Amino acid sequence: MQEIERLDKNNTIKCIWPYILKIISEEPIHAYQLRSKMEERFGFRCGRVTAYHALYKLKARRFVSEKHEGRKIIYSITEKGREALKKAVDFYKQRVKLLS
Image 1 (cartoon, helix red, strand yellow):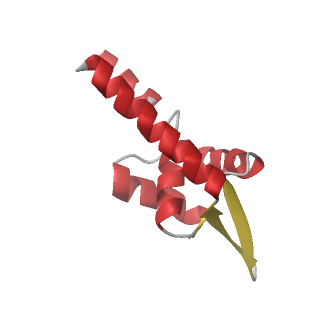
Image 2: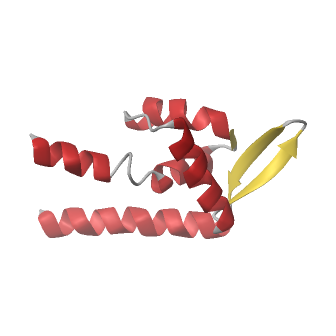
């Protein structure tokens, strides 16, 4: 069904920031691990550039912080990021409630 596919895409691949925050909230992570973690955990895989772009925006908004370990950068969620993730979860819960 075309409508369901579009709904799925709009709530996953086109809006990956809540998924990234959820993964990072569970453990600090390297950016290159995000795509495989998203596929493993949530069942979809976004483009490489998409993941990096979203991570860059999350960092700019101070939802994640970075720590350099040699040549690697490890991302962690901030308190502001935890608040944003909670708001995203609440948003989806509210939508489910309205549609049920």
